[in-house]
Image (cartoon, rainbow, N blue to C red; front, side, top):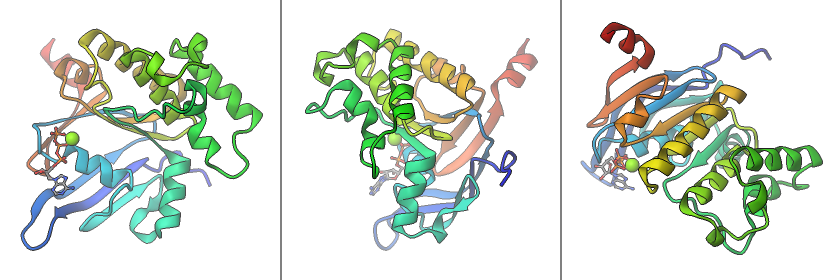
Length: 240
Ligand SMILES: Nc1ncnc2c1ncn2[C@@H]1O[C@H](COP(=O)(O)OP(=O)(O)OP(=O)(O)O)[C@@H](O)[C@H]1O
Ligand SMILES: [Mg+2]
């Protein structure tokens, strides 16, 4: 199927309520679309619903109502097995804390999404992951344990792990939140480069306005709503 024009992400009236009764209304009807290969920064105050939005889009949790469509698949129509395979084939996750496993080497950690699959990584997949580790400057760290790496290097290894299955979409929740500004900028630049080189769509939550300005598009979340959604280049044009 030629699905070049299918949005990689679409949400329709997405609502998420946590808890029983009145609970907390974390998303109040979010309608959002993202094209293949786009780089979107999600910004907003603490508690505004950014992580909830990412978790729904990444099928880590089910919405209270509304729909999420990932690469043409309506996630509410999938059972747990279908969701797991959609996550495994299409989506890569990067979190604030990298969750690398110290019992394994950097290379083994990066290969993990492929190793848990039946048959394990193919020769091509192994070559791809090694190439990525080289691109993020970890060629000579592959056999190290994660704790032998700096914070920035650990996050770079986690990025490679997210890319191992060649996802169409990367969801990154404050991937630079735990790094100093110099390492944060380095990691961000790498994500931007991987986005432009491989056409992988990125949806990235950040609290750093300077980094957000380096995205193609900024989505601002407030109290469970998208309150602004704009193309960074177009706004810059207007300012100039
Ligand atoms: N598992 C949960 N159970 C109950 N309430 C939750 C849960 N997760 C989030 N919430 C609530 O939902 C709202 C949105 O939370 P969310 O984590 O999406 O915010 P956020 O924008 O990611 O904030 P931050 O910038 O601090 O990470 C908040 O009021 C939060 O307290
Ligand atoms: Mg959050």
